[in-house]
Amino acid sequence: MNPNHLPRARVRRLLAAAARRRILVLGDVMLDQFIWGRVNRISPEAPVPVVEFDHESFMPGGAANVARNLTALGAATELFALIGRDTPGAQLRRLLERDGVDCRGLVAHPTRPTSVKTRILAQRQQVVRLDREVRADLDPAAAETLLRRWRRRLPGADAVIVGDYGKGVVTQAVLDAVREACRRQGVWLSLDPKPVHALDLSRLSLLTPNRKEAFELAHLPDPHPATPPREDPALRQVAHRLLETLQPALLLITLGEHGMLLCPRDGAPRHIPTVAREVFDVSGAGDTVIAAFTLAVAAGASPVEAAVFSNHAAGVVVGKLGTATVSPAELLASFDRAA
Image 1 (cartoon, rainbow, N blue to C red):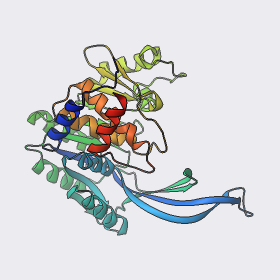
Image 2 (spheres, rainbow, N blue to C red; image 1 turned 120 degrees about the horizontal axis):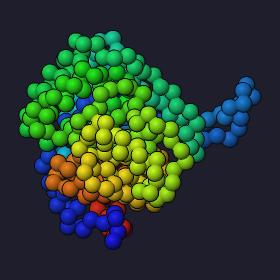
Image 3 (cartoon, rainbow, N blue to C red; image 1 turned 90 degrees about the vertical axis):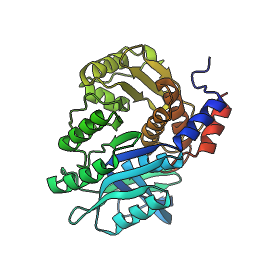
Image 4 (cartoon, rainbow, N blue to C red; image 1 turned 180 degrees about the vertical axis):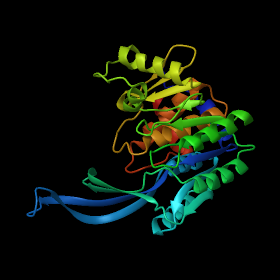
């Protein structure tokens, strides 16, 4: 049996249900700037390539990319995050509104700048990345404003996604408030963790670390990966420890070219091989995974169906350049190819 197979009719039903769902996204957002050019020579001033500028583009990044992935799949999506009162913040808001994201939950901070990541690419290869950001924890007044807007919109929401990218918005106090409110109202809560930002991540609905993040969360060294992942003893040990210590309902470890490992609290891990045919850029692939998985669950998918659904979505976006999204038509075409 093809582990990546879902009947086309089932995928269509999930997409139809997804279009009737409302998802809240809270976390760190950023503006991704891409400077595109070509390299034909090395600088005479230093042993570095000279990139001849061709054009530039801008895309929402971080939790903002999670939000636009949800709207691309048809879900009503509301974003709760911090931006600066600056040009990048205004530009990020415009891009999100163009993609259909409800931005009434964005809080414009008077002194904290919008995070900007600038990637310089030549011949489709990233040469360097420049980050302009503040990573200090959000001040209590701004955090309370953000939570107040979020709480107002929580009733009736089908799921919540927290995107922690270590930029200071997802503090322990914010996460505790979100977790408690979701538990009280019975709302699914997914989180994409960043181990560099130590938080109590216990008792969530879904955690989606990549392999490196999973080993860091478990405080274990990562040996050379064994294949297939389901028979990788170190990976199984990490999954067991995270399920035991953090007690998520589901743990989904993304494994790059090896696909993903779905680990329920009760039951054996399930390996989902990748369906990507070409990989041009993995930027934002994790955003697509958590968005598509959470939306599929909200639409009525089983955990295995949601993993397959999100695996196909990620397989599409890594074939594009830059932080990207997948449309329902592209997703259906991916399932047709895998049938």
